[in-house]
Image 1: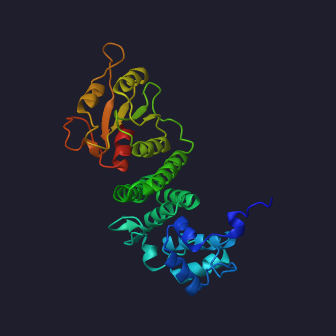
Image 2 (image 1 turned 180 degrees about the vertical axis):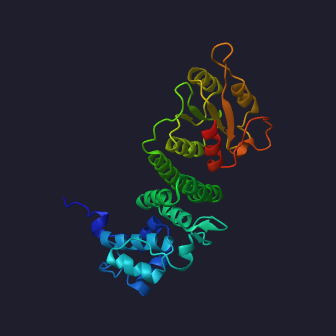
Image 3 (image 1 turned 135 degrees about the vertical axis):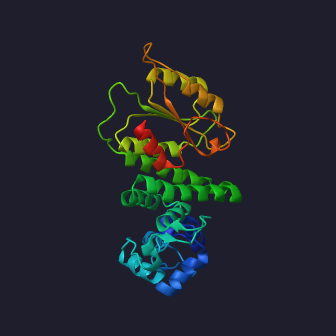
Length: 317
């Protein structure tokens, strides 16, 4: 019995390819008509069938145009096999007001716009490349605050307004952001703390699942050569207290994304913990992170406004 032809042998329809790339079918037809980026061959019924080589060209076109390269220039580069954006005009400023397929809104960095479009296309290699390039070009703090966070927020808003069809986009982007943050930490510089000083403990409060901001802080601290213990999402109060007792940390960062999860009582309990011999007992500096702490009184506990401020605060702790 003969084997069924593979999708690569048959080729993709324009509608299927458009869904895969996150563009409109009319966009593909326009690129074919204006720039000759259509499929090389058609089936017996004269229908367009996009084979792997054709798909590679339009994928490059998508990456280049999302980076701000003018379409005609992007088409020439895509046909030639080049996939490096050339910055001209507004692109050279590093910012753009175009929001692409996601509700970025306002004045955002060009890298953020390209990252969002790559995420919508589920183009994992492009997402990974854009994240790495942002960290390399701007450093961890700017890449996190001005590229990663706006794109993550835009995906979250799109998910909320469009239903579960954007779950995959959010998961893919979050996964690659997490991977990029861990790579950014790299091999940390030698720990410059005195041997007697404990690490910085990073934990989400009970019920809080948003751990990516803590991963960014962990990466930044490790770049500075500071010792950390990352516990991630939704750490039970009892486990957190036990870990603080065991580690004797110099600081504890408690992250709360939502006001419903922020617990001033838990923060105060950790801040009041003490250890060590009589006469030399000490406790941790408790740092509150995340918008969930807004409006929740916690006198004496610092709440830095962003990643840069948190790194400066903890490096002095």
